[in-house]
Length: 126
Image (cartoon, rainbow, N blue to C red):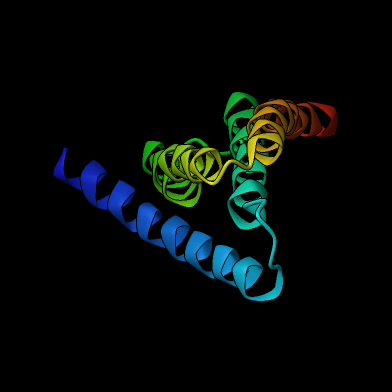
Protein backbone atom coordinates (compact mmCIF):
# COMPACT_ATOMS: atom_id res chain seq x y z
CA UNK A 1 0.00 0.00 0.00
CA UNK A 2 2.82 2.44 0.84
CA UNK A 3 4.51 1.63 -2.47
CA UNK A 4 1.29 2.36 -4.38
CA UNK A 5 0.86 5.63 -2.51
CA UNK A 6 4.40 6.68 -3.46
CA UNK A 7 3.82 5.71 -7.11
CA UNK A 8 0.57 7.71 -7.26
CA UNK A 9 2.22 10.65 -5.48
CA UNK A 10 5.08 10.75 -7.98
CA UNK A 11 2.64 10.59 -10.89
CA UNK A 12 0.55 13.36 -9.34
CA UNK A 13 3.68 15.48 -9.01
CA UNK A 14 4.39 15.05 -12.72
CA UNK A 15 0.78 15.63 -13.78
CA UNK A 16 0.27 18.61 -11.49
CA UNK A 17 3.51 20.18 -12.67
CA UNK A 18 2.50 19.77 -16.30
CA UNK A 19 -0.94 21.26 -15.59
CA UNK A 20 0.63 24.22 -13.80
CA UNK A 21 2.98 24.89 -16.74
CA UNK A 22 0.38 24.53 -19.50
CA UNK A 23 -2.33 26.49 -17.69
CA UNK A 24 0.19 29.20 -16.83
CA UNK A 25 1.28 29.52 -20.45
CA UNK A 26 -2.32 29.78 -21.60
CA UNK A 27 -3.10 32.49 -19.02
CA UNK A 28 0.04 34.40 -19.98
CA UNK A 29 -0.73 34.50 -23.69
CA UNK A 30 -4.52 34.28 -23.90
CA UNK A 31 -6.56 36.97 -22.18
CA UNK A 32 -10.16 35.86 -22.45
CA UNK A 33 -12.97 34.98 -20.05
CA UNK A 34 -12.98 31.38 -21.36
CA UNK A 35 -10.60 29.29 -19.19
CA UNK A 36 -8.74 27.83 -22.16
CA UNK A 37 -5.80 26.49 -20.14
CA UNK A 38 -7.88 24.18 -17.96
CA UNK A 39 -10.06 23.25 -20.94
CA UNK A 40 -7.06 22.13 -23.03
CA UNK A 41 -5.46 20.32 -20.09
CA UNK A 42 -8.67 18.40 -19.35
CA UNK A 43 -9.17 17.38 -22.99
CA UNK A 44 -5.52 16.28 -23.31
CA UNK A 45 -5.86 14.36 -20.04
CA UNK A 46 -8.95 12.60 -21.37
CA UNK A 47 -7.08 11.63 -24.54
CA UNK A 48 -4.14 10.37 -22.47
CA UNK A 49 -6.26 8.24 -20.15
CA UNK A 50 -8.05 6.76 -23.16
CA UNK A 51 -4.68 5.87 -24.70
CA UNK A 52 -3.47 4.37 -21.43
CA UNK A 53 -6.56 2.22 -20.92
CA UNK A 54 -6.37 1.06 -24.52
CA UNK A 55 -2.76 0.04 -23.91
CA UNK A 56 -3.73 -1.77 -20.71
CA UNK A 57 -6.37 -3.82 -22.51
CA UNK A 58 -3.89 -4.74 -25.22
CA UNK A 59 -1.37 -5.83 -22.63
CA UNK A 60 1.19 -3.19 -23.58
CA UNK A 61 1.41 -1.79 -20.04
CA UNK A 62 1.27 -4.68 -17.65
CA UNK A 63 2.97 -3.56 -14.48
CA UNK A 64 0.40 -2.43 -11.88
CA UNK A 65 2.70 0.32 -10.59
CA UNK A 66 2.98 1.85 -14.06
CA UNK A 67 -0.79 1.72 -14.47
CA UNK A 68 -1.26 3.54 -11.16
CA UNK A 69 1.47 6.05 -12.01
CA UNK A 70 -0.05 6.95 -15.40
CA UNK A 71 -3.78 6.98 -14.59
CA UNK A 72 -4.36 7.82 -10.94
CA UNK A 73 -1.09 9.73 -10.65
CA UNK A 74 -0.25 11.60 -13.86
CA UNK A 75 -3.77 11.91 -15.30
CA UNK A 76 -5.29 12.56 -11.88
CA UNK A 77 -2.75 15.28 -11.16
CA UNK A 78 -2.92 16.71 -14.68
CA UNK A 79 -6.68 17.08 -15.01
CA UNK A 80 -8.83 18.62 -12.36
CA UNK A 81 -12.57 18.61 -12.01
CA UNK A 82 -12.46 20.90 -8.99
CA UNK A 83 -10.68 23.62 -10.97
CA UNK A 84 -13.13 23.11 -13.82
CA UNK A 85 -16.08 23.58 -11.48
CA UNK A 86 -14.52 26.58 -9.74
CA UNK A 87 -13.93 28.27 -13.09
CA UNK A 88 -17.56 27.64 -14.01
CA UNK A 89 -18.60 29.22 -10.71
CA UNK A 90 -16.40 32.25 -11.40
CA UNK A 91 -17.94 32.64 -14.86
CA UNK A 92 -21.40 32.37 -13.27
CA UNK A 93 -20.56 34.95 -10.60
CA UNK A 94 -19.19 37.24 -13.32
CA UNK A 95 -22.46 36.83 -15.23
CA UNK A 96 -20.59 35.24 -18.13
CA UNK A 97 -23.48 32.84 -18.70
CA UNK A 98 -22.76 32.02 -22.33
CA UNK A 99 -19.08 31.31 -21.65
CA UNK A 100 -20.00 29.16 -18.67
CA UNK A 101 -22.47 27.12 -20.72
CA UNK A 102 -20.02 26.72 -23.61
CA UNK A 103 -17.16 25.77 -21.30
CA UNK A 104 -19.21 23.15 -19.45
CA UNK A 105 -20.81 21.67 -22.57
CA UNK A 106 -17.67 21.54 -24.70
CA UNK A 107 -15.58 20.16 -21.83
CA UNK A 108 -17.99 17.28 -21.33
CA UNK A 109 -18.51 16.58 -25.02
CA UNK A 110 -14.89 16.89 -26.11
CA UNK A 111 -13.65 15.13 -22.97
CA UNK A 112 -15.78 12.08 -23.74
CA UNK A 113 -14.76 12.23 -27.41
CA UNK A 114 -11.07 12.45 -26.44
CA UNK A 115 -11.28 9.42 -24.12
CA UNK A 116 -12.99 7.47 -26.89
CA UNK A 117 -10.42 8.65 -29.49
CA UNK A 118 -7.48 7.60 -27.33
CA UNK A 119 -9.02 4.22 -26.71
CA UNK A 120 -9.95 3.76 -30.39
CA UNK A 121 -6.44 4.73 -31.55
CA UNK A 122 -4.88 2.00 -29.46
CA UNK A 123 -7.44 -0.54 -30.68
CA UNK A 124 -6.74 0.44 -34.32
CA UNK A 125 -2.97 0.02 -33.89
CA UNK A 126 -3.34 -3.51 -32.65
